[in-house]
Length: 342
Image 1 (tube, rainbow, N blue to C red):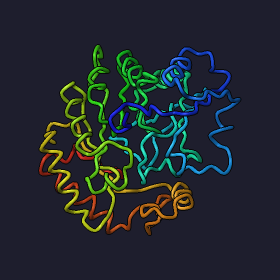
Image 2: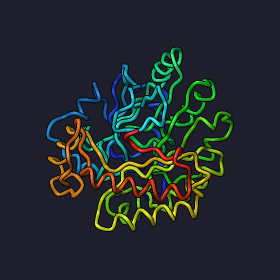
Image 3: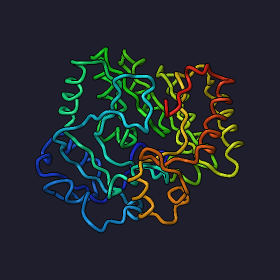
Image 4: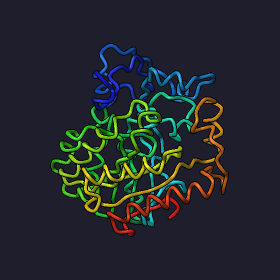
């Protein structure tokens, strides 16, 4: 089985399970999917996830799974390096830590000491936390901020549960950002959901020249576009995320070509909206990425530091993002093009 063609990594060789969640049905169901895995009880997920002297780059070659309970703080205010899309009450959810894909520019490489995946199985507590927020205000929540949730869907059914939750709360909108290529799964998840207009699917797209080099293990550009086509046909609002844009010598031609390709298959004027953002990352995250991967051209690039965030030199950043807005404006109204600083 190929990770690029399937929903989840079928080769977890070790599954670490907190003792307090060992007997939960969701835990047992996940374990049952990995017949050959070594199942190891642990006291607390941090005993494995945060242990000293880990090689997070090496771990990407064989990711292990950790099943745990999160006591609180599933929902956080949106980070300043992310886009709120004009929503006054913008949050992100953290129910899974880390991703099965291996994008060189991913900020998670600077956040976590490990590349292993943690799934918090106490989903009911998450939704109670969301309900307490909704009692006060409407909310816009990015549910796949610390991971790509779709590859884990056959394990957790978490996306489906979010969609059912949205159906019951008319003051909630969710965004699911993904690099998935599984359009069939998205079509199946949509069945029976009435509030599909409040489930925004955001597809992160990069030119082939970028995707092939820096987005290891992720589906190809065309596979993602085809998935977006299926999702659009199923009725989801489709957001296209040209974010993060990565600078190289031929970036102008690469991103013009990407826009033309996306329009050819998805018809940009019919998508929900588009986000644009050049690479940027909080200071502390980049410091850790540079230490862990001294050979990474992305981590070692000479960025400028502004208000605690590293980004390209202002001239490069403004030219890159300006070109994208100019080109996209040929296809879509400017009020549906969002820049990360807005």
